[in-house]
Amino acid sequence: MLEFVDRPDCPPPAAQEVLVDVRAIGVNRADVAFRSGHYLVQPSPPCGLGIEGAGVVRAVGAGVTRFTAGQRVCILPGFLQGGAYATYATAGLFPAASLIETPGGLDDRQAAALWVSALTAWGALVELARLAPGDFALISAASSSVGLAAIEVARAVGAIPIATTRNPAKVAELLAAGATEVVVGDHSAVAGPISDITGPAGLRIAFDPIAGRFAEALVPCMGEEGIIFIYGGLSDEPTRFDRRAMIAKGISLTGYMLGQVLRRPERLERGRGFVLDHLEKGTLTPRIDRSFPLASAAEAHRYMESNAQLGKIVLTV
Amino acid sequence: MLEFVDRPDCPPPAAQEVLVDVRAIGVNRADVAFRSGHYLVQPSPPCGLGIEGAGVVRAVGAGVTRFTAGQRVCILPGFLQGGAYATYATAGLFPAASLIETPGGLDDRQAAALWVSALTAWGALVELARLAPGDFALISAASSSVGLAAIEVARAVGAIPIATTRNPAKVAELLAAGATEVVVGDHSAVAGPISDITGPAGLRIAFDPIAGRFAEALVPCMGEEGIIFIYGGLSDEPTRFDRRAMIAKGISLTGYMLGQVLRRPERLERGRGFVLDHLEKGTLTPRIDRSFPLASAAEAHRYMESNAQLGKIVLTV
Figure: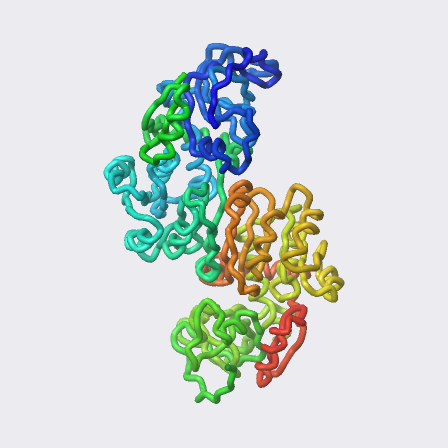
């Protein structure tokens, strides 16, 4: 259930907290999963929703030196607080550590659409897998905001992004977004075309939010010591570890989530540097598919569930 | 089927080949699996058997400069040649690249019992996982030669080896072999005791040749970004990837085999240095459980299948 509640005005920020007037909110697949009880943690209503936003600092608590009133900030509070720092709001209190100064040149909607997808892709492809020039990187469900960011991150390090989608209508846009190749199909159809593209080198990584039979179908496409990152469960099917094939090539099936970046300050700092660097170079760009007013958040969720989007869905306040 | 065949005398070694009089052979679980058709590659009889041995160089082929007749060598030809370079023989031709000078102080039986187990453990624990001081390392089926080597490798880098066994009679010997703790039980019993030992840190790695329900039981014991190495399939059961738990902690289920070390010369060189260094320090020791004459190889295989051993089973010529 998604419902709007009038709350009393926010109390003043406590130590290390910042009160932010929220201007735009990035809608993430995790929000939909959390709302519907399919996320890693269960909601205990009433609770807030939203892990990404942008706005303007109204007030700062004791000990906060990096931010001042009037400053534009991005909000990246992570998820495991179970909605305590929700961004689906007109204003909210956030830990200073969860804020990043809004990069110059981005409007609020773009600022709310940048970090979750870019850091999610960076954490797996660069920080953990150390993707290198010439590596083949499979990006499945590639028209999501994270998928599009992963295409750009792969390109940024000189790797070769291969996108998959079930929807033939998205091929041209995925190529335009930077995919070197686009493979259309479900679990039964993708393995052959992927292996035709990579040849014997195989995939260095697959970056997959689908899991189930789709992830299983990728195993024969992997190269030596390839990594299949599973960062979602769109398929809702179990995923079997194909022991013989995985041992023969030293393949990993690796769970992954953005929290692995957000929970480690030194890692978040490296990711922030990468994103800001490539934002400036133009190799990373927030891609907004469609905006809704905050009051239409339910409609925005239904739109995400339709899988019609290509890029980020944003709410504006 | 295991059968002895008289072959015509070996031809002289070709370029980059060495003719070795085999004196001792290390029996590995992979030999048993290959013989019975359960290995990653299928035997196509008649074919040889054996991936580890020690002996004396009889002759060298053109271009071989590292070895000379009369020199004692260890033989480590790997497996994927499907028995072409089998060590279950009185003499054989081997690629010079698969030979290592026998370390001083080791007799032939010890020399035949050292490398497969030590390098298998080193490759996963040190080279791939970069196990660090204070890390908890679970070593299951710990009384195998690889398990015992893994206990020593974990200790050598300052990590804390936790051994598991189904056989209570092996506890004292596993503690004597260097395990900090020994947990007795099957998949239904080990998770609680392991988590009691590690506390919230959890396991940095698990090094598991069992797979199936045993590997699944380890998932809740893993720490953040822990790695479950699967290097065998003793259980013969399927292994499910527990998506939610693996994503929440960024856990990997990683196939692994010694070939990942043997196929990469620079990696093999690092592993060789580690093993020689710790052999000299006394922190790594080949552990022989029992020797059989080569003619009793079938009996040696049956003994391995009984799981009564603690350490290496060796054949002598």
